[in-house]
Image (cartoon, rainbow, N blue to C red):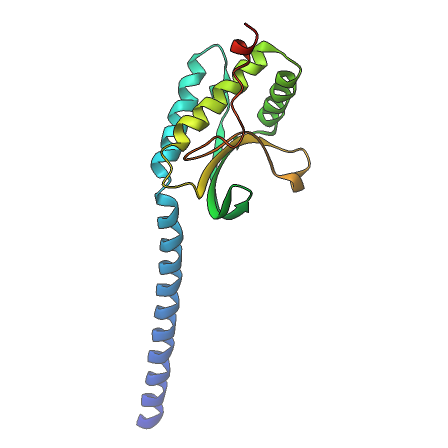
Length: 173
């Protein structure tokens, strides 16, 4: 009887040890994931501040509620396995409005063009604070076709604007 109790005790200790190791592993992995995003906290905070400030202007872009999402291991023409901060309106209605503004800007609507240029300048300014050129910021709207993802209207890395800023007001003079 005593031997059986000892055997059960060892089994329970083994289970406790395995459970503790599993919990420790999960906590460690999630902490590492969170820490990799921490280097972008100040950049995201600056983006939030800049976009909120614009709500006071007549451009009304800051009235959108934005989603800020860090996507890892992005590979495209401008980066290899880098990090991209995606910024897009939270609501489908605001995504549609931003899509319409983008379309109107391409149809030479000066008011819409000024909104797009303002957003591009914000992204360009904040991107200069990124840790390196293998990380970037894209601001845009969600495609109506979910499979297409984010349609960027502003995109920059630390040293350059991926989507060039066209200040149409000066081109008209």
